[in-house]
Image (tube, rainbow, N blue to C red; front, side):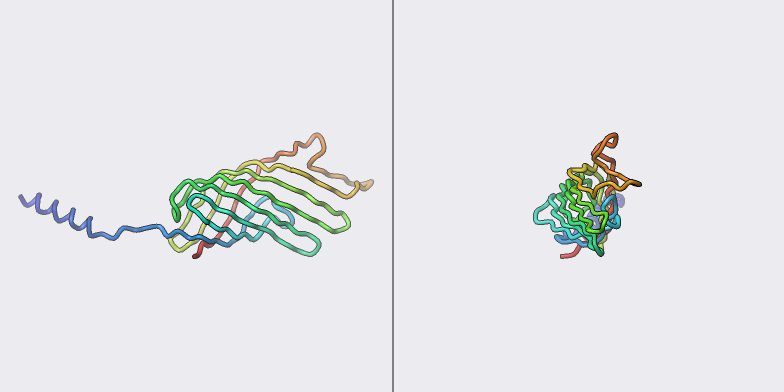
Length: 168
């Protein structure tokens, strides 16, 4: 009889315990790291207009060089929860120095986004980077490098790393 009463009390306590609900944050800002010129780091801004869909822009400008990109992420978990993801990105790079370059790159990655209760996000993934187009200055007599020419294929492995803070 006492065990039944104790069991009923523990059920009542469990029912009264507060339920923790993940906070969905619709905007996030931070930095991306990876194979992205000019300095392998770009600033990033994400928007989550509907559950499971994230749209973003990223870029960096330093003297004579700039990158601008866009991304689309599909997240599998409910908003506000840590989640696996699939991402497709596009990056345009322009270098106007004497040894100029213009490149268009596509990325397809999969990975995981860890989210904390305070809004911090850490994204880690991997996938493939596709050199879509590349324009280089004419080769000098001493040095010439291109990702597009043989024997190098226009597809490379890539890492996807980002640190962000979600808000709103």
